[in-house]
Length: 420
Image (cartoon, rainbow, N blue to C red):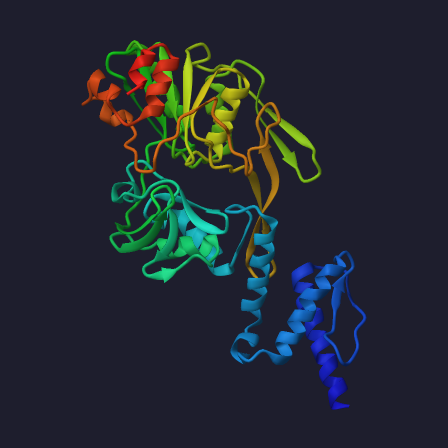
């Protein structure tokens, strides 16, 4: 009788856990008293039975009873494993109640950090891009750096959220990142003092000896389009007849701003397509009234260009509005929808994906440039703020071959100047 009662209690416990994980429509599957009990949701694939077999065996026999007595830890671990298997690295993710509370604090303005976009690539935390003027950029963090340790603790097996939480902290405190740089096959420790992150959305400068304006779009935040419209007015007054639009190391931002900014350079057509899980597509058309629809443009991209910057580059490319120069972009392309869960946690689930106007998938593919110009990590890129102290000779002798190729395509640089 006691054994029967014990089995019933285990079955009831499994029933409750399944209800938490899969929702309504639960029933007890076939089992016997000598093997693991199996509980299956009505729409659950039979392959999931193995999970419950493992659960029952671990509950009965695993040596560390402390772990087995922490069902929340086990449930969250299983959820994160499931999300990892979805393959939407760095986007779809599970957020614990504690992490939800911290995100709300960040929204309220109490967030400080190093100023870098962090993503996941091949299961490893990677720097997508440091923000312009950020502590991370000043310390020498580069796009493509893989984060191995934070303050001496290995983070390679952690979720993206867990890694980011370890990097964040109070203003004025120091965090030490151990980074692996694939291009040079070297590891290095970098100490960074956390600070409040204030990044200008856009900046510009005239390239000396030319009529080309370099416009740097740092991130697609809420005021980028307003900044850009003002910049277009200023550059035209300065005599600019062509633009180099630099979205290298731009981690993206708001979809609304991607549409508005792209529309400043396009006359008609679509900026992007959005496709849901059923294959249904919705088009986002160009907004009329762009302020720079006729001026020649070249767009600069690299592996640190992500999200909204990829939408922008893809729209310019598909509409044959200008050439895209540089390296294949990061490959961000899912729309996250938040689902609040019963225990206060949240599932941020990629429910749609972005495509270029011609239907090219951005997720995991990125935007391939029209003209590929690869640069080693660590190359000094020319920024608008540095142009005021440069001569034309300084530009021609710079390491920034991507910008030089853009000048060539705009007719501002003889081809033989590149064969050095």
